[in-house]
Image (cartoon, rainbow, N blue to C red; front, side):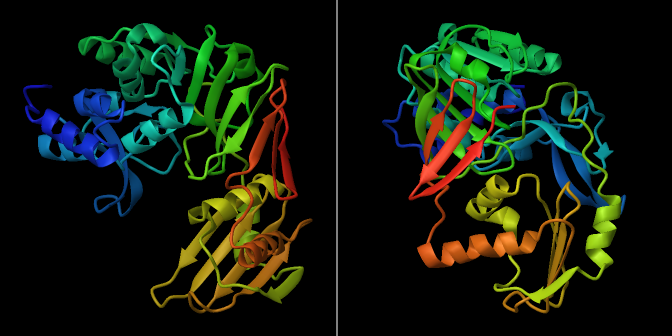
Length: 394
């Protein structure tokens, strides 16, 4: 692969310069790690002219070296390497995969380094990271030495592929196939997870050395949790001010099928609501507002958001919940107040409007910078300025 991409060092050096300052301890790892070797193929979500629909399209790096370098060394680009059970390494060029959930990726380099910087990794830190493509593991090895790095993934193929690619560039960390939410293979000074968890696994607190630090994100939110182990076996810390989002942990070859929302979706699109009102605010893209989305997830876990846009500027937002609640908010334009239909046991749009009112009055939401206390069983408590939320152990 080096023969097909002789200038990768130039791309990597440019990415390092754009990501961190030259004196950063992460500059050299970024500038000297060949990310493209870990992602020879990847999927992109695109509208297929051939199929006339949206699908994941396979890209083969060696057959298009310039596009390979531009994608691999873009600090803002996450490269999806697996969708459902389909790994890009095993797919035939030209393959299209219809809508399904991504199951592995090479996280954008800027975010990998940001998670590592939250961890404040010292030169002698025994560090556990999550594997995926192996690129983040390579950065940790370059920074610390492979003997201080353990990398885990639930997928045996991903671990084997990462092992071979790491070995090719001279890194031989400990690599294990395991569910990161279960028992971990050792004791660590730092645990950095670039997959999201439902709540903090109790096993992490067991595996953390006294004073050790964990860094992770909570599933379906943008919340980055940074916490240090305490003497009682729990941990304390805070929510980082910057948002991040990763794929959620899975416990097997694929995610289990989600609930069948066909009937609820039809209802949300067409039914007259039990409640019909005018919303307080214009329709917003909740998935693009991490603080609003995160607060709503803590208050009403499990809401699914969908959006329809028309060429004339009209937009309709939908909210669906597993308990049968639904909401539809339709507005003639992006600045118009919507007509809101709601049904089921909860008024989902009212919950959203409460959060937006809170944001208007206070100027921010307390999830950013909230204090974090984690019990030894993994129960996570957030609090800031009188606001509290608890994410229970599961």
